[in-house]
Length: 544
Image 1 (cartoon, rainbow, N blue to C red):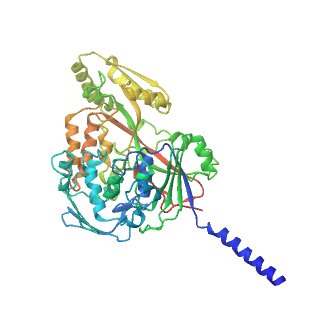
Image 2 (cartoon, rainbow, N blue to C red; image 1 turned 90 degrees about the horizontal axis):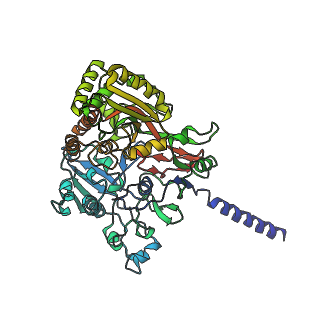
Image 3 (tube, one colour; image 1 turned 30 degrees about the vertical axis):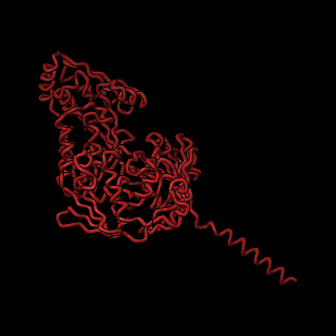
């Protein structure tokens, strides 16, 4: 009887231990996000949240590792022709689309779980890239593919998308032919724009691709398991994923929370493992915080000249003010990282290199009081005035610096200028800039992607982010030439030429680099951000 009791007791203990150990390998991570994504169609997604989800739920031909380098994705290997124009990718034969029960309402087949061919093939990439350059798709990043043969002509409606230099030789071989060599092409292929798209599933969604969970088809290390209207998104580990790196987390929860104080509290309590925080939140963290920060230098502060202002529309007047500004005497604000080397911030990349390192610094207009005075006199004559009133608006961190700057202006230009500094809070500054209610604003411009050309697009005529109101046909043509015609290492030289043009014409005077931050809880490990926060990668994420 005692033996039976002991045997029963031992069995119960073993069962309890087994149950307790079942979840030991389960890793659930939680990230705070600012808003729900509106669309998860990789070819058109724009928001930070959407890009983060796509970079985890989709797998391209290549992907970026934690050093920002392109490594094998669905393509297990590739070759590049000697002239750099033909890329031939050999695809893995064990990568698959994740089927969900939610697709029952989408796929017209009661037995789709058994009948649907889930293998990711070269045809999926051919279809995706042709979609991306098609004008009908209206992809915001289509121009990044204009180096592919006929891509620009297709986008302009000059030829059919069947002429695109992308061809599935067979299910596991994809050939991409470029019009001009682009050393940055492999990195471009890691962007959401270039994620595969299954044509059969896409057609079944009837123009709703990526708009709801049941219209989203994933092939990456995670798949979208929940996308509800209660601001909660869940990505689950794709057990069938066969990439280079083992997927560690079993699930990743994305919760909308716009209250930064709440986010900080939850990070300190390890309720959240990852989030974005503003500069002000980062620099006001309590000294005993357990939160860890990782910075990416993606912003440049400086003098933003309103080129539509009655006086500052004149290039000579702008240049005179720049040539009378001793930037080296402007001390670094506490939140700044260091002196800016150009307009394009250090987060932007070209191939495997940091663009800023590869291109070097851009030369600023030299301080020259005599030359500045002559330019000012000339400018006043051109606008038909004897003097000009100039006001700088800035936040408190730059107030004393700007007062010093205008003293030099007034000393040299005397009665030919009336200069003032208006100090406002950040919210007012942003509003004034948005409403074009300023002459010179000291503020930051931010890189929303890792492509240097995207930063320089801000200055083109009619661009929605053109706070400078800069409009110059020569500059527009220069940037179009870089995007549409530049080849090889010429691309870096041309981008730097565009930067130098903006500096020489005094549209923007760079001062300092600033960073945005990804913040991690004390327990979080292995989570890393892509350049310019084009996504947060959770594939290697864990908890210590």
